[in-house]
Image 1: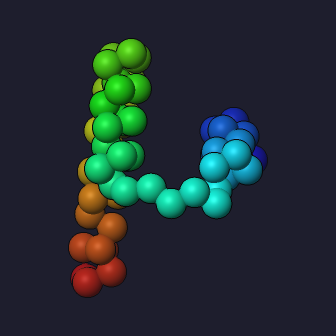
Image 2: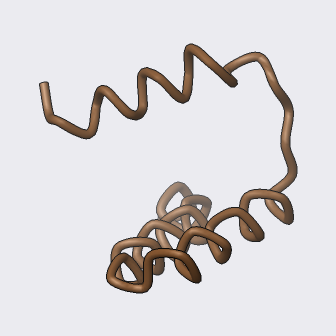
Length: 59
């Protein structure tokens, strides 16, 4: 188990039943980066990966 799995599991446990929009998620990611600029690159990579998921399925 990776250390990050704990945070992912907590997210799922606390908010797993909620429905959100990508607009909401993008705003939360931007807010996080504004508060934690040292995480700009990992957040950008995650956002890009999420944005391009369907491209991988088409190939």
